Image (tube, rainbow, N blue to C red):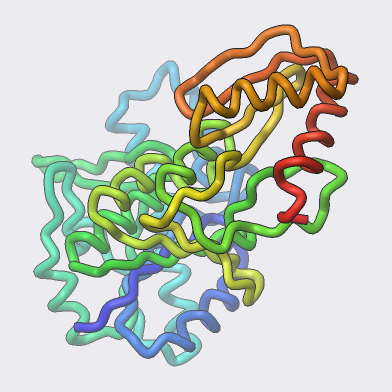
Length: 310
């Protein structure tokens, strides 16, 4: 069976207008589709995960109660999305967790394959699993990406399409730089390095699982036809992968820590950019600057190492 696994985040599922974009994407696929859906919207939306948490005081919440509360967001999303797909004459069905077969210890795909004989699109809740006694549990935040990768592996599908509200994975996002190109191709480890400095377009656990199972991830915008970013095992040609910042730090994701450390120290000092401290964190260098020096350091990094993304 030719199956496409795709996942849509909360901004895509959050409004009827955006769900209509999902409908159009689904219509253009000539395959059976397993569609993993996140809870609708972000904080402030009625059924978003963070909005649901605002309804309670977590100090008085058992973990099992919390899991059941958060599960309602995904359940509502799958049923509403499946309903809109059916209104557009798409043969869709919203699966329950039990029908999906997502357990904490394993995935039972027999029911998925059986349902695909009857339906063209199966809408599945992300972020959720069942434990051995049938109670709902939640994955780490961003777990919809992880769910999609796990399901793809269980179904022997070698590619997952992750539809986001960004055009792909960018090396940096800074005010003042509006037209930044995204990566066309990116290695799993480079994407993990970006996640480590706060560029969390794809959940880190999902990236590591995709790498382990050699599943290609395609990151695209549900809002446009941009090509997006392909994440798989590719040549790591980028010494400088990306950067981000805090109020007093510049964080740079790099391939080779020692080489990049010497190079950046030289670059900054030659340009009279005086950092207070350098911290080494796995595949990341953190330079501590004063506020004014930080702004200049960011600009120098773009001009010297990331100019081809403008």
